Length: 490
Ligand SMILES: NC(=O)C1=CN([C@@H]2O[C@H](COP(=O)(O)OP(=O)(O)OC[C@H]3O[C@@H](n4cnc5c(N)ncnc54)[C@H](OP(=O)(O)O)[C@@H]3O)[C@@H](O)[C@H]2O)C=CC1
Ligand SMILES: O=C1O[C@H](COP(=O)(O)O)[C@@H](O)[C@H](O)[C@H]1O
Image (cartoon, rainbow, N blue to C red; front, top):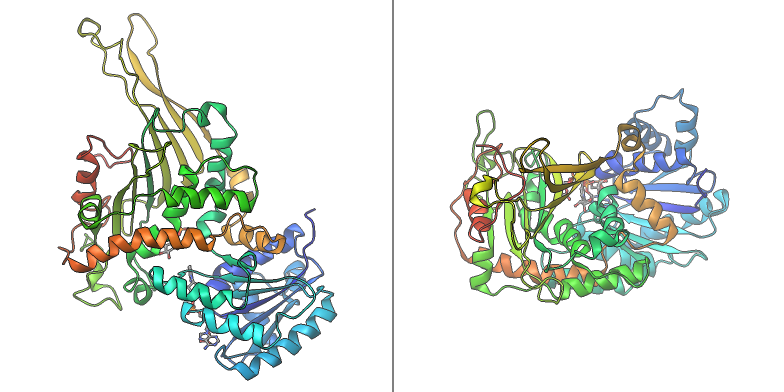
């Protein structure tokens, strides 16, 4: 059984899509595993006027359980509700009194987690009022979980961070990036730093290029009004991709702690080359999907303007100016309405300097590059492509794969990202959250691309649903005499 953790959770935006779809089911998983047991309580808040009972009914629906499920009912009995407008400062005292009451009732030791599952424009206001009205004055810990997006550029992110810093210290702020809660993203560190074979080759002498692909099969669904103001660059590159790239590029941390890991990620991001106008135009391409056989174009989706120039696809080349990576590009791409839903990292090694097998009289095909592929989702595992001799007479070589995949049983037991991140917050472990320095360096890089794109009129739409993006994404890498490892057979 897991160690029981003790805390009061206050969910601002506690009746929203994220809370019902991800947060409460993740908490229930923690309950079933024993991390949450007797000493926890939840206050859900929103402007909606609900009784505790009505809120509990909604929570039950979100878990998909029936009233006859005794374990679920015990869990749900820890949930309470306060109708609360986050802009109404006076009302925080009501929330404080309820929090103090539940603290006594469930023996919560004054530990409090404030989860801001709200529109980002409220983040600063809530953090300020929590402090001013004494909700953070209890005896235990006070931790603030912030949802994405953290700003829409460096300036707005800094403004937000300055506002939060007035009420919370950096080690009390947990900025969610749900990719950091994914099992296989955490495996990047294990594979890199747990294997001499891998880490000794993990540099520009042996690695030709690294490719990171976050491909989505779906479009914008119901989130068009948010997405059309964000675009793939802000929605996926600034956060998830930059986090993955920093884990791949960083030096070995002094210890496996949040402070040391974050310090190395920041160092890596500091050496990422921030592009000037010319380089940003050459090294980044954007796309927007048009209509497919049974799919309408992005511009025809509900709540998307008919002349939208928002990008639903990004591909780019990142360069690090440091000793380890100088000359080894990191190619990244992400988009909606692509061929399939998957996330993977392909590490392409350099070919042997001399190919002794492909002399003309040997008729051997040239050796292929070794590739280490990390499959993040939906399947989880690794393959390592090596060259080996084909069986039989003569001497021909052929690529073979060594592989490992997480089996179905283990997959089912893998914690959901939000489950892991809620658990980490209770432990006070910030390893899998984005620090302010990481966020700020990521924005500085992304802002340059955005600045250039905002000056140019894109020729959209430029890719078909079910493809892997616009032709320009292939040209970007082919220009460097390389290819995407994952590509569709044409
Ligand atoms: N949904 C998702 O999959 C994801 C969401 N996020 C982020 O999570 C956050 C929440 O998203 P989501 O759940 O989808 O949003 P929703 O719009 O579904 O929910 C918003 C919540 O905030 C409440 N709210 C709005 N205004 C106020 C107010 N003035 N005072 C108190 N409560 C208020 C709403 O209730 P009411 O209107 O009744 O007050 C509702 O509970 C956002 O920052 C989003 O970017 C991030 C990644 C994925
Ligand atoms: O943060 C976001 O991520 C999702 C993709 O997440 P995944 O875990 O399903 O890969 C993306 O659809 C969404 O636009 C973005 O805001």
